[in-house]
Image 1 (cartoon, rainbow, N blue to C red):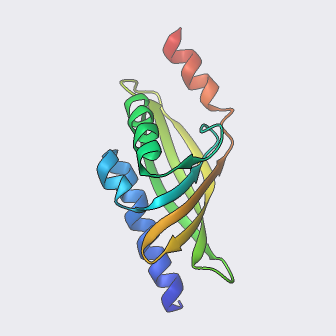
Image 2 (tube, helix red, strand yellow):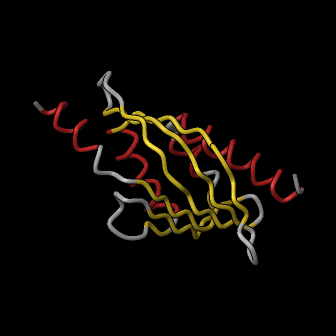
Length: 134
């Protein structure tokens, strides 16, 4: 394993385990001040720490999450990596969860994430939301 790939693996494990804590400030410590974050729920980019703090606060209040890295793909020409992951989601306070898989595109500046794009099929989440509100 190359030293860059090993570094990316360690960072991926650290970042995803930090997300698993659902501690907003700890998660923010993984990101640069000028971060850009997108996922299927953001309706456009989340730019900067204050916007990310607001997004994470709402997200963590609504969902219990757990993430595990599965495979890494280094990006050529930049300090970045694509991370294939597996996760589970449950609405906060609910026992029923859903297993999902997806991919994060991560661009780094040093050991901080400057851009994070998250890709997964969110349509299965509707079943969790319907069950919780029924």
